[in-house]
Length: 123
Image (cartoon, rainbow, N blue to C red; front, side, top):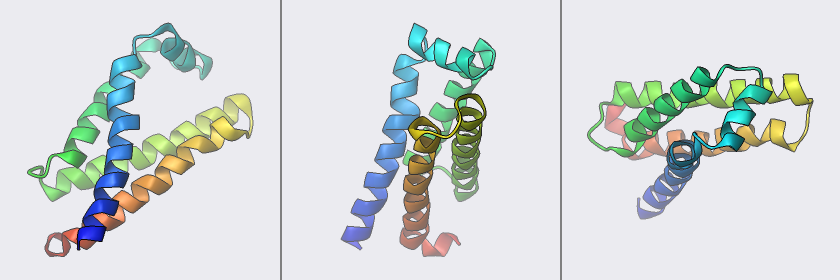
């Protein structure tokens, strides 16, 4: 059980840092704004994305959040990573940056799997 908790919290912390904390701290930099423009999205889309990422991370890390909300947060991040891969592939072709969101999708899968392993009564 202890090993499972370590795996779950490690995977969840990686998602929280890279999808919640870092974007919240860097979203208003010119580099971040240029990244959104480069993909062809308007600036307000980047702002909305940051709000939803931070809310999603909070849903994942706060234990008192209901299971249904956590499930939607996991689903939202799945969509985020898949569409990020598609966006980068459509604009830049297939390269490391295109496939990078899939690494986080795999980490998210570990977090999701261990969430259910640690909370079987919630299934």
